[in-house]
Length: 444
Image (tube, rainbow, N blue to C red; front, side, top):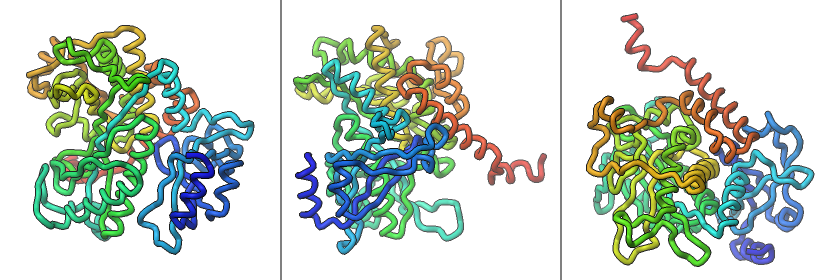
């Protein structure tokens, strides 16, 4: 969309304010809001803002920064009232000298995608963000699920269906092309899937989904949470990512009809690269202390590093091939969770895959017909099945040692991310939990 088309759409939509959005290194959405009359100026000159106030920016650069609008990311925010209707655009971050800011997460992804573009490739991603809907519970911090449904449960007109329908309508209006929505395994847990797209658009869509779900849920008197493991003893929320590579002619580079799994050599190298760097990129795709309470055996979350066709205990799953659906052949990475910054998550996933492709890496034998959760530690060792990190500090240590992943982030983003996460871990480890009080108050 060019500037003229955007200005016309804004006028037709009767928009009064524009939110110029970007993310900090942790994935939190930041917004600079301005009256619509400033849009033309913003399109021509950008929007200046103080970078020292943003997580991951202040430690690197104290000067002003410039937001450059991506017109194609325009969408009206459907929950805003008509008399003060707002729309949003995502922005890229530049320095005063006109150079892209190295610590801009969206810019990190765009740099990785340019490497694929040089090869004539497009990286498509179809994420499946899961979330919980909780009742507002006063001052009680323990969340109460909004409903009592289970996996794919249906009832003709219950409250959960009505809320999920409102969520899907809002997301469709913002251009996400929702495919399905359904109840997930745990009480109050849901999933809304939108059609795959190139990684940049998909990352924008993940952020859009998260804040739209939260806004619409709040209108319904509910709290929406993308926390990976909000309740002990039940399934947590992941963000499985279906991935494929296409060439400029629209051919799926993962498909090979002559292979028993219908996978090409590129697909095998892609899978091998991600398996080889899974421990290294885990801090990015599962970035909170709470993430590692989801990544434990027994709750459908991947823990062990391997791949398989249809086996949901494997880190990478190859969905069943339907004859004639060559473009649907893909690799599903199951360790990311929705607390991750999607720009950074997709960047390191690409970097790992490219390392596998460029070095002709091959994955081990698939874990078909093997439930890895049922194997003993000795059996896993014999089969050379490694596991993901068990905590955020362990994942950060692996990231520190993985040059491929670090180079994908760039030193500016890497240092900002590690600083933010170390502070988060320090804060977490000093807190006294309910578990500790119950376990040790009278027994220690």
